[in-house]
Image (cartoon, rainbow, N blue to C red; front, side, top):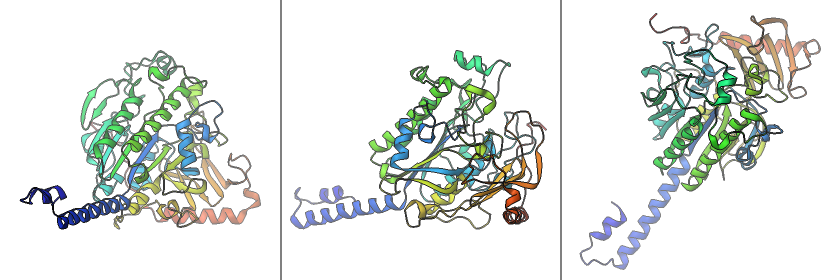
Length: 479
């Protein structure tokens, strides 16, 4: 019973002193309960870009692209310099983020078809636990906005994986071309019409082809709408931009505004989007109750030259297990809870699911292996050391490299979509000290045989514990 209903039940129309005291006590109690629930169940917003390089933000060293909103977020929150994704291409990377599991465990990777395509018959199995489905059990509202790329058939869409709603494109923005033309020329002209990519609302197509010149703005507006709609209820919003994956498109407001050309325009509009989301959280009065994480799915698509990004001082890019392919610019903000700092500890998108579930007061199911670590104690300053100390680098279904502490061993290498058709096998493995040499330029294997042995044993133990499942990426519709 509310305080107002108690007052209305008094026959005199006026509330005596005892009733006023009771009303005051109830108001205080309701406020305390509200604060307690909010504190116990923080909101989560993940902003996930597509093909953004480690060096594409000004806060991560880009000399000409301006990203003031992300720079501010990095200053007010945490800038993570050793943060990884689960794979070096789109589909498996996204599966790793949402499930907290390496894609090899749930069939979301392949050595032949690296990602899902419009003719793919598979997708993320509904037996997988996602961040959304796990948080929904804890009373959370959930929304997915943007690029999905985990299956476009109804049984694989976000609404089948714990999300109440979905507004976005189901796969990459360069797919479904009606005829082959230059990505460079089409983007420079702003011509999106040849990319017959559908824009979906839940399971329905609402626009085809999607107008990609306005898509960043519309995804942002949808995320802001959801923040306002969810109000005081705990929520998880997954905002996955389909850019700066080629083809590049930006709205008129950002056309030719960056000194870094069309790629700079695209990144600066994404930066604007981050600013709008954070302003919406402020306006809703929930900034201090919301953890925002910004990162990307893999490194830059280097073969597209000035339409692609940069990995900064890191080596190579998308499609490779060199650092430039899987280490991503990552920023986290949670005003009043996480201590602003530059974080040199290791982390990964695999860690988001266990971290969010822990912060929400839930527990992970014990019927499967998770590859993520709970970062909550580190984020809240309860420990000075993050729990992750190793990273496994997969290329398709194969383990190419392992990092433990500052050392990284490459058992196989392959460059990012440029020239090299087969992976090169290294025996002994290549070895790099990433603290001294983050650009992976100087092989120190001959000087550290004991480190090589230790990393080989770590890789062997990891692979022995794997339960591989058939790939979801290889099947085609109609087969």
